Length: 346
Ligand code: CP
Image (tube, rainbow, N blue to C red; front, side, top):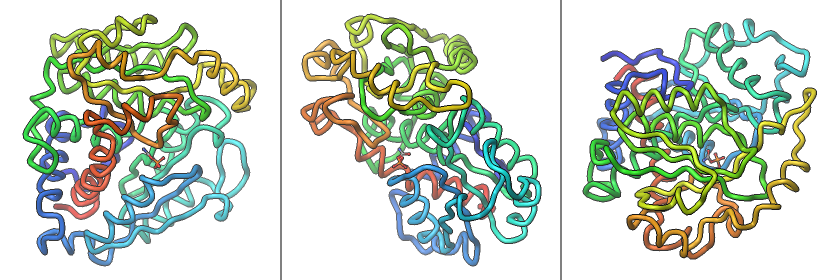
């Protein structure tokens, strides 16, 4: 299967066979990390990274990934480039994309939260770049999706329910496991990208999915409809509940994360302060050891950065069933695999 030149905006737009190729290669690259056979895949090639928003994991893991493949990742702050966005004048996406395609092997973009004025603007921008670029465009988290995170999640959960971190990845072990994606109160007003990607990829790989949140925190209805359809196709269930106990009952993977409400964007503005004030009114929405007792010995997962004390207690986040650092590590391995396949022509 040839993935060379393919964009990755969400895992939902790749076939399951394509995702399995990424996961398989990521597992091999993890096991044999500094092997010579991977050291020159991106030799002399550059991956451009547009970060409209801050990052720890994504920037560092992509830079390390490019280094380990013999290439280079160039960090770019779009505000320093006079680029046109939905809210600012500047060079058109068409011109920028066509020029960058002459220089680089791939382009990554992160745009979400306060860098957009309405849900969907980030996704539109990535699709515009993907349309004009001759090189693959990879989402590094945008308002709708976070495909690299979704792949790292599935890899980490598969390792935990399989032979263990670093010992191979068989996503079939997740079939029939209950994934709980649950809202956590928090002070960060986060976009929907990570949780929506988790719902999509978890349902793709045959998990029973439960989504739990207080009234008023609905996600994108189109994404929910797609995740439900994925469950139907796998003969699995998709449940939405506002009852925390019901959510935790029998769960195998608990993903507690804050996300903003659908009212976060009004008249082209991101109402961060109001979102945080509203979210902090739900202190009971925190993942703690008592609630984890209702699960079927679930693992705790989170894409990070964690808002400890709001989304989850330290006891759970740093506890023996937490897979957060394995998942974070897997960002490196899945991104190496994605770059090798889409930019290196492996
Ligand atoms: N999970 C994730 O994308 O982390 P960063 O925001 O630190 O990149």
